[in-house]
Image (tube, rainbow, N blue to C red):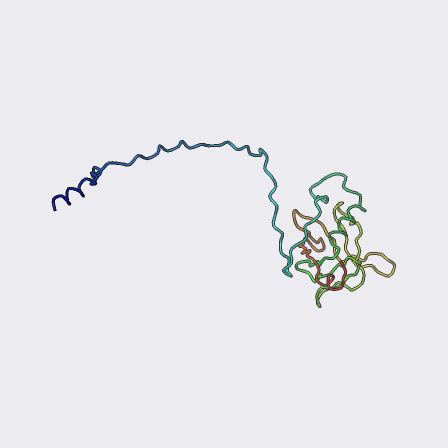
Length: 182
């Protein structure tokens, strides 16, 4: 038996000394990179506002800037911008009974039973005020626009200038879309 124990004992390995550490790699130095940053603040896109009917507000053409002073754009250019902006839209003047669908084919449809907007054709004409204001109305038999509101801009909002300043919701018209109006 001693021979068996001796034969097995030759493969015996000495245990490591208690408290000895295994070699660990040396940590690498932290590297910082310099990233160039734009020295001027950049514009952050604003999320689209939601109108009273749950639709997103339409973005307004940046070319019509109410903060500009002095000579503005010619009135026909301003009318074209506003026409493009309002075509196929639902317009609700908050705090009033103005609720209208302005279809791209020129149709004007009331938006609710309490709306003061008559059915017919809609149109725009320059307002007597600032160059970025227009009068929205319905066309009468002679082709003249009988205005029911004056539209303008105040900061990022479309506003109505009737008896004070009221915020206007301009969203895509579902009624005009149902009629094939845009």
